[in-house]
Every structure is written in structure tokens, then in C-alpha cells.
Amino acid sequence: MKVCVVGAGAREHALAHVLSRDTEVVVSPGNPGIPNSTVDSPEEIGADLFVIGPEDPLVNGLADRLRKSGKKVFGPGSDGARLEGSKAWMKQVLNEAGVATARHGSFTDEKQALDFLDNMGDLFVIKTDGLAAGKGVLVTEDRAEAADAVKSYLTGDAFGDAGKTIIIEEGLTGPELSVLAICDGEQAFALSPAQDFKRIGDGDTGLNTGGMGAYSPVPIASQEIVDSIMEEAVSPTLTALQKRNIDYRGVLYCGLMFTPDGVKVLEYNVRFGDPETQVVLPRLTSSLSDLLFSAASGHLVNPPTFSTEASVTVVCAAENYPTSPKKGALIKGIDEANELAGVKVYCAGIDHTDNGFITSGGRVLSVTGCGENLDHARERAYKGVNMICWEGMQYRSDIATHPTGKEKAS
Ligand code: AMP
Ligand code: GLY
Image (cartoon, rainbow, N blue to C red):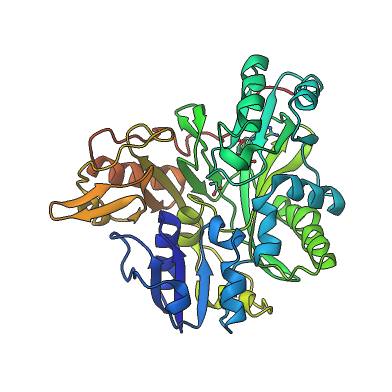
């Protein structure tokens, strides 16, 4: 079998790396750090299966176009991808499916939005309706900051059209969890859960990012909890999608929070998480190509199996990420890190010059360590990180030392 992975990040590198255990892989467009990257567009590539990584091409209908030309695709069409493309629509589906989620309102009018803020307790959450590369969410206790965000989102100053409709949500508190469900349109299998560290700074401080690190498995997420998430969130959501004639074949990524009132869905994404993929997939002991091919064919058969080992990934980001990442810094040490036992570097925002790799994006690479337990995996991941450097490299030093999420009582 030949699989084409679409995308250019560390998530796609991890997908390609794990798929290549038992299948031929090309990555379009990939990047200079991912083997078998090609400049050919997916539409020009002959492959038995297409696995689409990022949300933008899914929302923009790449899966539909490929399916129309007879290709087998793992990734929802633009109808199902709306779950991520519009948070207002996602909330409608969640409510219709009876899935526990934060109370919310959606707004295009500033006065109505500001009035609603006053109903929201002392933790304010403002989100863009549309895609904002994981940066369109503000969580703050400062009413004035929340009001400023409402204004700058709605005028389009902050996030262009993506913010011209906003969601204001009740602020929830508790540890977070990511559960990635592999769906074939009717049924779904959960992958082993992960926890993602979204803020830029140690101790969950500073701006939200696309994700600065992750670990798997997650001790607080027992099999019983994962089963209940599948029964109470994923299944009813797939049913609600089917009612709308949406044949959802791809990942349904559940972003969850353990609140004092139970587990609630914060968001759905329609793709593999980044950096969750870099910790979940290395632990897979069954065939990824079989799993994704059977989901894409509408017939999931064998549930995935996972090693009892743990993994931790640390994202290394460019100077000034997430506001205005600095490009062009010379990267050293990737090969040396890859030589360490249990360490694998997954490349994202990098480019190649005659002098070697340079930074070319915000999240530059992820260093994954696998080991007997979380401590061992973390030690290996940071050993890898310590081999790598460039001017202004940033990373968190507390990945997998504590669960993420605000612990303040709500
Ligand atoms: P989202 O893109 O909706 O997952 O939001 C990104 C991050 O913002 C989440 O991982 C949480 O850390 C935080 N967040 C989102 N919604 C809420 C909420 N209702 N209450 C508290 N934090 C939230
Ligand atoms: N790690 C968060 C995401 O993939 O959206």
C-alpha cells in the first residue's frame, strides 16, 4: 500500500514515521526534515490512501475533491469539517447531541456580547468562530481585557473574518484531556489519550499556542473515563452528523476538561492533534495504515492497541512565537538528538539552506522521548532537547510534570 500524508508539520512527520513501519509513504508538501516529502500536490499523486493532517484543507474541501476523483481518504469532507471551521455550529451540534459543554452565546453585535460577558462569572472565555491557528481563544479573569478582545475580534482587527462572529463561554476549570477518536462514519475507536500544554510559559502562563508539549498515557484518564467519553460525546455526535447526512470518516478530536461537574467537551477538532500525535502514535502497537484504511473505507474492524510505555514530546519554538516568530536561525543538533535511545525529532517549521536547517515557522520541531514510564520518557525527551539549539529557541521545561488546566475552583 502507498499512503499520501497531506501537511507540513511535526504531526505529519509523526504520521509518516509510524505509517512507514509497514507501508510506503509520501508527504505533500512535507518539509526538508521529513523523508519522502514531495512538491507534487495531493491531486497529482497516485496513492491507495490519503491522510489529511491540517484543518484548513479539510475545511476547504480537499477530502471532497479527492473522493470525487475516486481516491480513498482519511479525513472528513467540508460538511463534517465545519465542526472545527465554525465553533458556533460545533456548539449547535453538541447541544443537539446532548453532549456536556460550557454554557455559551455567539455574537456579531458588540453591545449584546458585552452584556453577555456580565453573565459569565469571573473567568471569561472569548473565541473566534472561525479558524485562527489555535490562537483565537482568550481565557482571562480581567473583565477589561475580555471587553477589549470582544471589540478587536468583532471589528476584524485581531483575526480578520474568523473573529467577526465570536463565542463567549462560561470559564471552566480543571485538568484537560485530548481523546482522538478514529471514525468510519458510524462507529469509532478511541486512541490512547494525551494531555497537551497549550500556554507558551511554564506553569501554564502566557499566551495560548498551538501546543507546546504533550504526554501519553494520562494517569487521570482511566479506560472507564475514555469509554464514557466515547458513549456520551463521540457516539451521539456521530449520530447527530449522520442525521445531517454527514458521513464522517476521519479523526474526531475531543478537547475535554475534567470540571468539578464532570467531564465536558471544550472543543472538537476534525484532525489529529499537534503535538498529541507525536506522543500517541509512537505508542501504537497495531498497524496505523490498516486502521486508517479501514476507517476511510467505512468499515472499522480491529481496535487499535498501545504499548504500556509512555511518551513525552517537547515542542521547540522560534523566538517571539506565538506573536511574530523569527525565521532564519540556524538549527544545530537534530541528528545528534535522533541518535539518542528512545528519542525521535519530528520536524515542522524548518527550511534547508547550504549551511543546514534554519527556522521557518513558529513551532519548529517536537522532540519525543519514549520510555518505561512518564519520568523516563520525559528525561529522554529533554535529553534530546538539550542536544538541539538555535538563537532564541524557546521551550517549556515543565512538560508532563503536572496535569494542565486551571485548578481554581469554579
Ligand atoms: P479551544 O481551542 O476551544 O480548545 O481552546 C483552547 C484552550 O483554551 C483550551 O485548551 C483551554 O485551555 C482553554 N479553554 C477553552 N474553552 C475554555 C473554557 N470554556 N473554560 C476554560 N478554558 C477554556
Ligand atoms: N494540540 C491542539 C490542537 O491540535 O488543536
